[in-house]
Image (cartoon, rainbow, N blue to C red; front, side):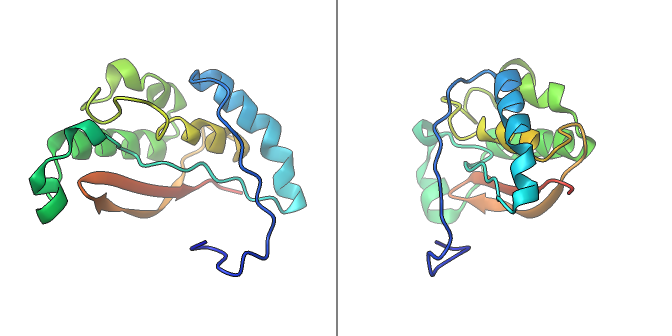
Length: 144
């Protein structure tokens, strides 16, 4: 709604069939040819999403916990380097886990998006970043 408030474009929502980063990357790669037809592939979710760990300071004062900022910095660095292997190893290598993602549903769409971008190992461009309720918001675009 924020991007196309008139609702004048068709939208197709897909479910995530697996939590395996490699399989999601391959799924995105199969979607990549749609770009040439003008299809926009969006993977949505927050870069951090630790709902069970929300504090009054996060809600009322916008405090950003270290687990959120550390995870975001780690992910931003890996995205800027095109290091998909590092991003895929988030469960064991990312700082702030499991607080940043007690469930992975807000993180794993990025693998479909990276795959659909054509070259997942290519650095991305961050276009929006910041925090909301202490959770990292990071929006990026892949190179065409």
